[in-house]
Length: 110
Length: 110
DNA sequence: TGTTTATATAAGCAAATAGTTATATGCTAA
DNA sequence: TTAGCATATAACTATTTGCTTATATAAACA
Image (tube, rainbow over all chains, first blue to last red):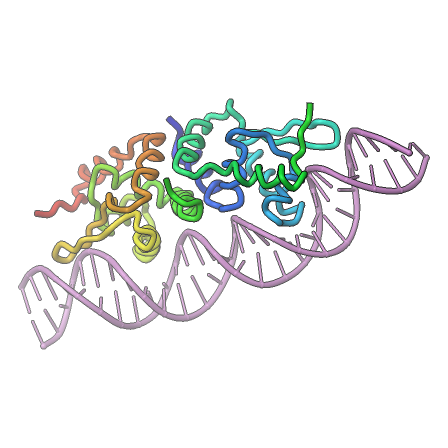
């Protein structure tokens, strides 16, 4: 159970098509900034700013791997269960990553 | 399963503390505009504008009873299941109505 | 009928938002 | 060390948002 302020903040952040899709993509994957830039056809600073908002709220976390910074859902965050139940109402965003892969633009590390 | 635009719109509307609390209050009750004005200590036009946004999105519906207009959740709306699962993560807002009742400001019809 | 009560709409304004371009930072590899 | 790629931050701008006050609409009631 979350307090209403926290829920409102989480919903406000996910109430943006770009950020909601980002979180949908992160449901089953890690992604780096340049992959998002490719998927959304949007400037890199714009993507970074969206990710920063999600990170500041604790919804996603980042991990550097060499020159890339990979983002993933933060399962430790108190709003994680809420985020997951919201994603259950969304179609899977996986196809966007499949397209990336076909275009040879998916970044795989380790 | 909803399309991503619809989910983003729903979350954006509920990503406001006032509207989220309104929907929380409507989970188990009907409320009229003047009750919301009392609960939120906010101007009547402001309340009306929030309710209009929720109604335009189909999240709530209205029903006139004499001089009052009562709002309730719209169970026929496709986003209703999403709204309910979100409310499951929120503390019950019932106490606000109990306060109204004690202050003799709850409006009961029929 | 005219007045009161409840609600909606219009118009205006300050703050927040999402994008842009320009620049800074940090890692990699030659 | 320098060049190049990935990412972050800063500064700016246009748009959207949430509120306010003023006014319109609609029902109740004397």
